[in-house]
Length: 385
Image 1 (cartoon, helix red, strand yellow):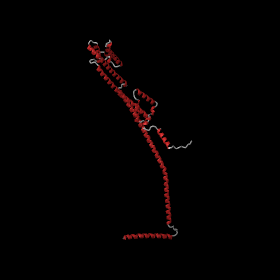
Image 2 (spheres, one colour):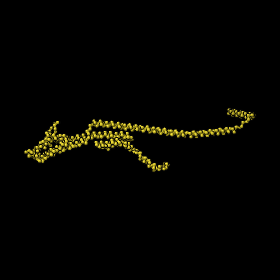
Image 3 (cartoon, rainbow, N blue to C red):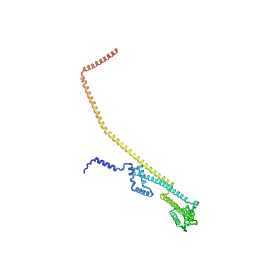
Image 4 (cartoon, rainbow, N blue to C red):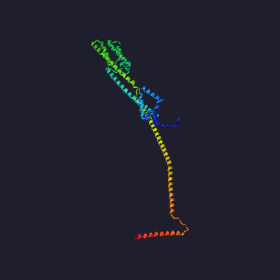
């Protein structure tokens, strides 16, 4: 096996770079935010998520609504660490609970309004059925069946009695149970249709043929009218029961306000913690960045100083060479000057030859006198002029 490293081709380099980019994970803030939540999908957090979804389904809520809200909070806050992701999830949970509480309160108010509307229509129906002049049932006294509290058994018994009345009319008979059934249904507080049914049954068997004939015509109409009124009343009862069944718990405004205030405080606390955490991480990052910049600057300064020190000896070496060359030139010039001067001055004669020295002195003295005479003559000439 060869130990010599082989150089990578450009194609291999490009492939390695592409693979490296693939292995670095998401680069966008949204992708990083999603990846930061991976730690919350296992262990206890996964159990919590499953329990939350099951609880929401049992309460009739949509778990996807919470996931959508959590995603929106994640995109807004962009958590970069697990702690930040946990805080964001807590904020999403509390916000979702607050929204659900407000929605439940609004739904409760809407259901109360619907029930009130149904009850109002039912009161109108009862007022139309009420026989004028009949007083209200005294408090504490048991009311007749048609005024009793609504229940499935109540309406079942009323329809049985109405069926018997129709059968008695068809057979043109009045059994002994007629009085008992009429008292059970109306008592002393007849409805408008109930009073007409009782009267027409009596008139149908009287000696007055005209009244009997008229009673035979009108009696089935009033039995049918009473049946329609009872069916309408039963429909109101069913509507009210259905609304109450789907309404959920009855919420009180004061309790809802307290719960909302508590959730709002929790959301505010988690938000402050998240902001403080992000601020602290940002400050730490800025300090680390500043420290790195200073270290890099110091390193650059040291390298620059080292380069300067390495360059200075060369300059000092060149300068002495130049100085030496200048000194050498000066020395050579001085030697040359001395040589020329030595060549220009005649050789000194021996000290023992006075004639020569005297002659030189006389020549110098004469030259000096001649020069002084020339200066004087020139001065006199200038004065005369």
